[in-house]
Length: 268
Ligand code: HEM
Image (cartoon, rainbow, N blue to C red; front, side, top):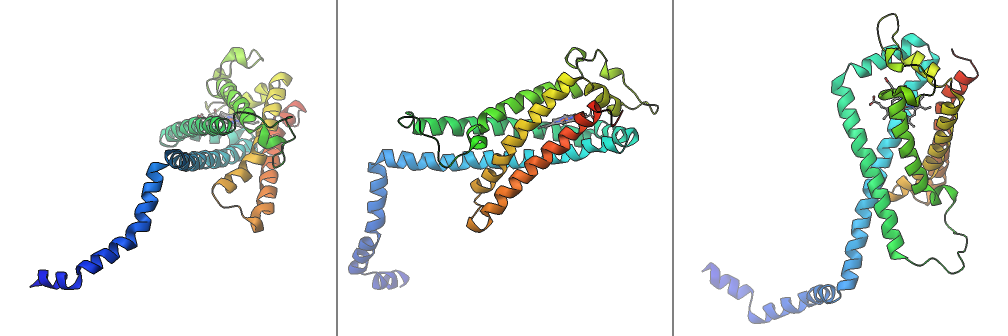
């Protein structure tokens, strides 16, 4: 009974009409299959979107880390008790320390890897430069040097970890063993480590140079992150660009204030 109802509702003409209706869709599918180059280009651009997405999200999280780390370090201006208690808390809370370390490492690796992939794919898409090497129009110095400044910052991070976390004596250029520094409460003396560490003008100079590159990197990277995530439009574009530059300048001034204050003996 039911079968005969279906047959009644779908006579041969209706089947034909349905086939004609899906023909444009079938034609579209055939077009995609028969034009592999176009389909491949579309797949590539989809991959690029997700690669750039990973690049932007990891960059955003690292930006938040840099701000948090700077706020933590600025506690040096409150005094030894404050920064040593903070350092002691972090070092003796493995449930925060290790997930943060592993997460940071993963973020850095993913950020650098996706940045290199995007750069290689951009180069592959346009292997020959424009004739006469004209001045780029829609880019500025910060955006053109994004990959290079990022790689130098990565080299700085390796030095920084050996300097203040692993505390390799030969690399601090002061002759002082940072591991042996303890305050009267027998906590690691992070305050003294920074005072001694930045008393070397070479080391301080290197940190200030690295912070200048970080500032350059962030001044473009932060606004490009909003763009990639589709959060930058005409109305907000100018504000976002200003925010990126202001945040980069704030991070530069905040971080550099520590070696500069130590070199000028404002804190000792
Ligand atoms: C002038 C700027 C900076 C100062 C004064 C500074 C200071 C420090 C100090 C004192 C430590 C050791 C903390 C401890 O032993 O408790 C540390 C660790 C660290 N810093 Fe910085 N830092 C600066 C910039 C940066 C920047 C720009 C980055 C990353 C982009 C960074 C990433 C790290 C990391 C990943 C650690 C290791 C944390 C750990 O696993 O123990 N630092 N920093």
